[in-house]
Image 1 (tube, helix red, strand yellow):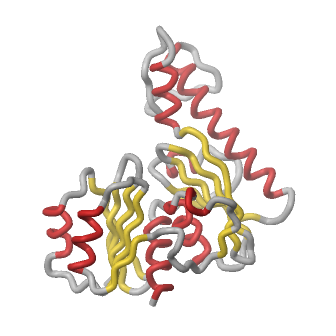
Image 2 (tube, rainbow, N blue to C red; image 1 turned 90 degrees about the vertical axis):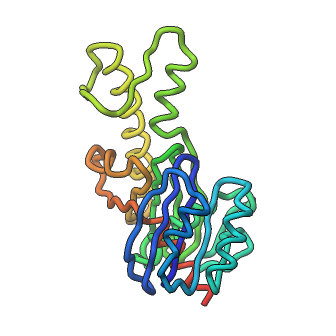
Image 3 (cartoon, rainbow, N blue to C red; image 1 turned 60 degrees about the horizontal axis):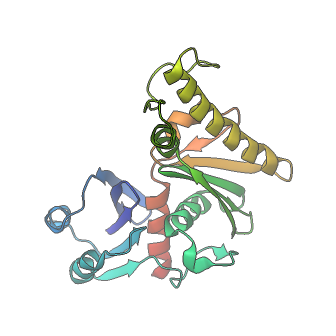
Length: 239
């Protein structure tokens, strides 16, 4: 059995795999030594991989190194089943790489757009030859809502829950329609631009993937486990 751990800016996800088959995945509000030991208890875990956007996870690496026979941390130095064409690979978010590998493993001969809608929105492109070409980063929905509230005197803090008219009829709906509509138009524009050059498959992941899936005019595929699937593919590649 393989274990993958993905630590993002605002959440953590643990997933268990039998070879390429996802057995279970679950979010963790706060990853602790006791909690992780509880997950590992009774399991025969042969290999594990950690992907973290946070700097200090030494305790976690130490624990996994002791409890898992073959343990890896996803870094720019780890061999990948994907070529990276990025000028500063040492600054590239490894979760973005993992999501790209996760899609590539399922569609090895297609041009791919991988859109992760979480704390930030990342849009990454992978060629049909398996080359990661980079991508863009913008604020996610929660950041946009919080910024409007924090940097203005009178705008309230709202979220995606509630009425979503084409044009807001009060302040709350005006903010919601502006933020959500802005993201929808932003993402559709990226997809349209890539479709001009060649056929592209577009995948959404992240906490807000399913919320936006049916709001885009372009066809997309939402998969909340792209990063764990990519991490597992990277882990199997090491073998």
